[in-house]
Length: 165
Image (tube, rainbow, N blue to C red; front, side, top):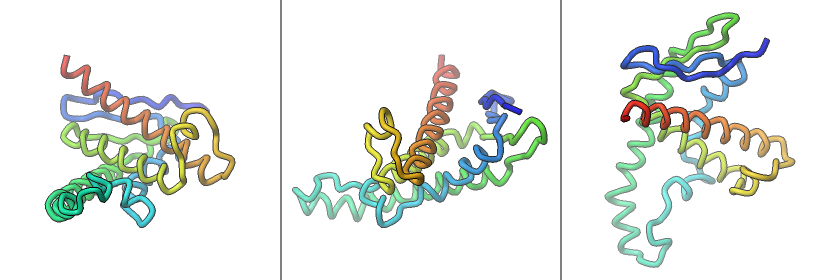
């Protein structure tokens, strides 16, 4: 049975993502881990502001800015993980997830973190994500995952813009 994935407003404080099959529910559950900085993705998530041209500015950034950025990234992943714990299996209608309006920006940031980390770890650039399908299964799966996360980001941002109008 095919389902239609949708994001709708449940009430003023809640968005509901519904119509998810087990595969898409699992992709959602991977967001916190996919966005966790690792050896391969750390430089992409926390790039040096001067790329080594100004050692003093880079050192200041590492000391004063990066810790706060790391904390914000961690908080986004934690909030997403907590929201995911409440995902429901609605039987024939698939899985359903409520996203509190208060957590919307954590979701947008967390999805972006996951996309950046996945692209870096799998060596995916714009060409692979927009035109070519990678031949390696893990890279092809990561490209799909990145596109799915991008769609969710777009929905969350579009819904937000509609609310602002």
